[in-house]
Length: 145
Length: 145
DNA sequence: TATTGTTATACTCTATAACTATA
DNA sequence: TATAGTTATAGAGTATAACAATA
Image 1 (cartoon, protein in one colour):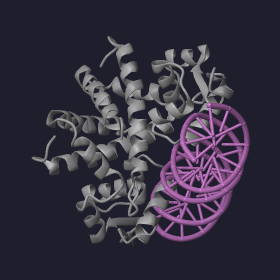
Image 2 (cartoon, each protein chain N blue to C red):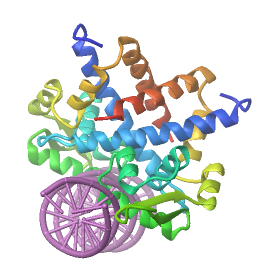
Image 3 (cartoon, helix red, strand yellow):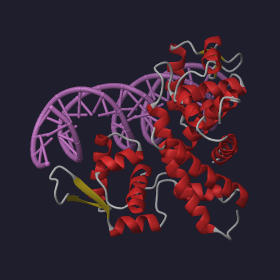
């Protein structure tokens, strides 16, 4: 998008930010008793990209390191991730998803995903595909701010 | 979407919820000093649909009435909305956007929208259009839970 | 008695600043 | 001195429960 349609970009930005805000509220409100949306998202990163340091997870999740410290601690308490020392650098920590953590994702547990899946089920297959492409574009927006 | 592709719906639900979560974090983090994303969204409802009761705004924004009481109070303090008594029903209150409130929206002020517009500007026009359609679909997902 | 809105209170999420340990 | 992570603290956002006023 170059500068030939700046008003259109602004309009879409406004509509999209409000839609994202409202949907995120619904997703949080529907969270399960087992796991929160933030925790689930962190697990998903670890499974997709493998074990990594807390600061790396924080960068992916777009939160500051102290925030991720808390999330990781809660996941350790739940037994969904493990935290081990880096083999050569004593400062670093390596966080990895546990077997149980992987099971949580496989079972589609928690955090409004069931609710959202039910909502998607009311759409046409074409609309679902459109949202699938949109999710990829949203990821693109978030990357390397 | 009927039951012929349940796995696909689940996958899209997971991807979409995580993408929405991350983008909403970026939007909040980029908020201006003038107005928050929640406030902006409330102003947008009032301008699009006209004056209405706090409970009606809360329903649109997918928050509980006490939460909206707070948002409205903050907007009154900022002079961006007015709060008047209902002409016949003494219990009700009518909230309306003020001139200054309308100006805020016109000026594209605040709450990460400028940031998002800049991000959108890096996409192709086709991708922006795709996100515009996606925003409409997201609204559809949120309606009448 | 039902409805509308508010107040009181508490919890989740996230941030910044300061601290500890290691390199 | 720089880096990785944590602890301490604070603020935004939202919820539930209880209350007041009106219908």
